[in-house]
Length: 158
Ligand code: ATP
Ligand code: MG
Image (tube, rainbow, N blue to C red; front, side):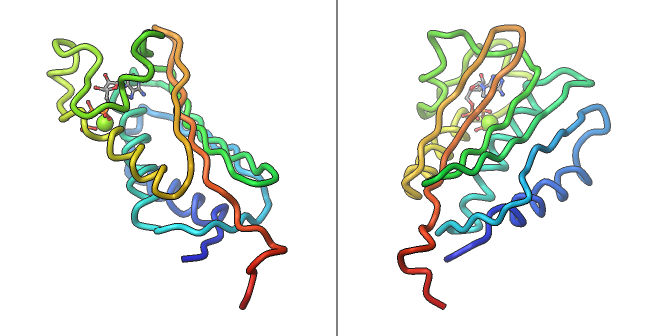
């Protein structure tokens, strides 16, 4: 379905602001521009949910979570940055594998199956987007994903 992403993202984040722990601060950097994408709303909501849940789960109290939307010429870029424990450089690709969890002992108490990001990657790729991670151990992690924009020249039929 054709969706306007900017207002959709505001809606999803507003829901988080109401439900998140008080000790986590969320910062939004979202432009005032309309961006049309072809997406399954429920599936992209699951993507955002998995990534934001991780950011909260792997962050200390008082951590800041920054959500940024960049609108480029042919795609949009969403980045979710946290100030948590981070991920070692050699493990950055592995976190998108099924059942992979960075530190089993450390993570056991945090719970989870290690499927969240594997499903997330499948959903983003099913939308012809890409997803990757940047991180610095001890400083935080940023998960970035893209979605192709609908061209207004082509097919913008009403
Ligand atoms: P699930 O999402 O299935 O409940 P999970 O959170 O362990 O379990 P994934 O979301 O797939 O699984 O993440 C895989 C692993 O990547 C996590 O176990 C964690 O070690 C690491 N990871 C993911 N996001 C972050 C983050 N924001 N900061 C630090 N480590 C992370
Ligand atoms: Mg997870």
